[in-house]
Image (tube, rainbow, N blue to C red):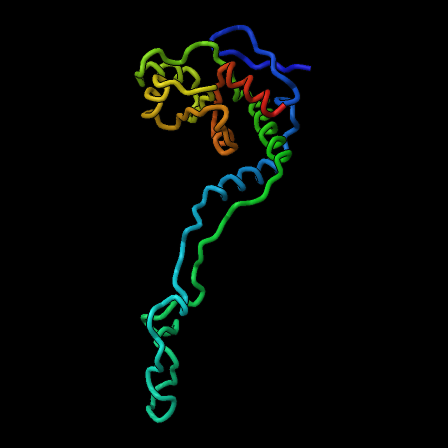
Length: 203
């Protein structure tokens, strides 16, 4: 069974596989998918020094008794100004495990919901023939959406140059598509080549 996706500036629709674009929306899985992607993008390189990492402090600052001061065994104690940090941050990995099957179902769920909400469209036309921002802006203004995601099989130079100065417009290859871009977009425009590649990947 097939579904229909509207083609921009044409009266005809394009048939797509229900296996990819007919998935029941799973909000919990989509949330997990987006959270996992954002967590994986974190650097996790924050680091501080504990008392064992700070140099010095080998000798006892003063004798234990008789000085009138509080006892102290090392100048590297967190209580000292030049000491280490009590609960020091360490480099860590924020990656979360997600099965391949869950990832595929999550992406299909997002694509299907975009189609149901009429936020997904196909274009048979070449978006730009010159690296001019104005040429692309005229076409995108007709859609009336603020955040637009353009998905192509391969980004050509003209499209990359024409889109880079337009706020809230992003161009991505189908092979590099991620859930955050899909969820954040008000409108997703795909070329037939990109659509076919996604169907082959997530069918």
